[in-house]
Image (tube, rainbow, N blue to C red; front, side, top):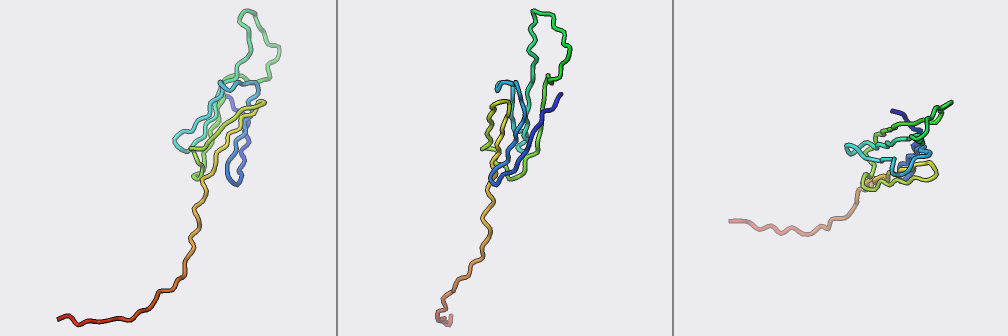
Length: 122
């Protein structure tokens, strides 16, 4: 199984994965989330062989066959908001971040002081 080049960027609100997939149709690429924590990019590059001709390659430098990459996602990844788009041979997967909880801010407030009325129980 072959590999494909992927850049991973962290932005303030998301993680962005950019994979090189030249010559591959959108229907031949699969983007999945496994086990609620792993981003999987897979697919298959096919040679444009014509079965009616006897083809003999003199040189074959472009990779062909199945490829797969897996990435562990951080705990602050919003798995429900993942999106993917493919254009000009680049697959871009955007994984939004879950915003951090608001920091705890201690409060200061006054408590009114009243008079205590004590009754003697019998």
